[in-house]
Length: 293
Length: 272
Image 1 (spheres, rainbow over the protein chains, first blue to last red):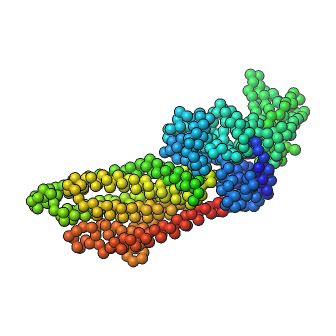
Image 2: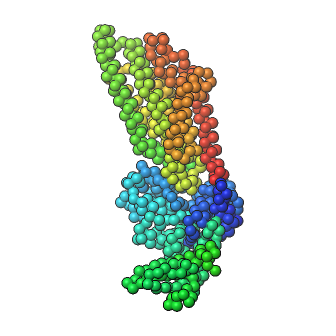
Image 3: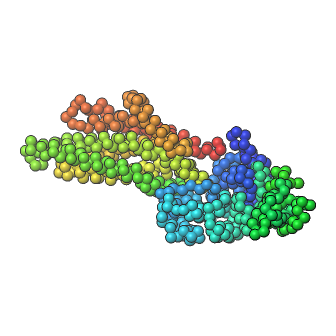
């Protein structure tokens, strides 16, 4: 269980990254979604014990992150995949994982070897595991990063934008892997790819400008947009500015737009459609920005 | 220390050892020193043959051999000093900044790795890797000299390596790891160490400051000039006692910088 109370983070220069966050995150998969600059990475880094909050408190499985001891104990339970991942280019993938496993406190060399073998298999890097990391492609580096986060059988897994750089098949595999992990530990998945959340999370929070603007199940977010999602077909002209275009599809005799808002009398042929999670998210963000009532 | 810390320390040391060796600079340094040994052989060989003819014996008497051994030992000391006082501080300066620049540091910070273990692992990794390189050079150059004189007095040679080189390695290598530990840029670290060592050149090597100066004049000069026999004008006034005092002062200096580096990294979280 992660308990976050009145969490505030202000960077030098009075940049308010987090503003009074209150969250309780239980076991299973928790999604954190929001636009760039919403404060997701700051929140993740605070939960991972890398960043000191300006005010408020965070407890990870009962360990208070305000104390050095609490942070050390929480880190022993943690698997962390940062948004921007660094490597030692002159180590092989297997050596890098061994190094990380040692640092995470997997002291038994046989256990390390076994875990590394299983994880390189899981992320499909067995054949290149002994190659130097500097020869890896971007996707391969991402996958080795995922493997290191899973080392040491963490109780809390924090993954920040994990699917960036992965091909579609790998993304699906990784989502499934996270869902499987969520059966054994708490997973916090931060992303701006709503699709990743919709396929794997039963609980989510939407952040904007350092605040939590929504907390609930994906279904609840979808419900918020119900009755506000339409398809409009035109000869090519853009829909009225008060409508938010979610997607555009070129047809042979015109253009079909998926829009959020109320087309009203301007578009009598507009058809109401079932909202998706992405619609719900965009609806919420626009409402939060005061664009839609 | 508990078991986890010991395993972590061994792990950081081991992988830093690999990283230093795979960084190429170390290999270049070792090869250059071996080449210097070979060059000395080339220079000295003719003189040794001439001396053999002058003395009129095939095998030198022991006292002449001892003198020549000291001369040879002090010859390799010059390049060794350049490597350990000039090159090593620059080679080792990025050991911690590279973690930040490459983005590995947040990963390391997310593990339960204590700051002290991290710093000690970095130091041990550097010392072990350079020590292994020095060992290769010591044996290689030793064989060259041995063949040159058909056996020579090993004591001055081993003292130069065992006391002189190891002291410079521990003190200057350690300083190069600890001083730039707060920087997050490899180039800045390199410039800092180059400036520290360059600046130290102008600050003199006498008195207490001489013992603390990272140029380590008492150690460098004792073995450089003090070992050449029969040349009283070159005999250094730095004695074995000065070597000991310089090493002790350097160790104290290293302990102070170690404590400062530990504090800076440990309370890095409070500054975020």
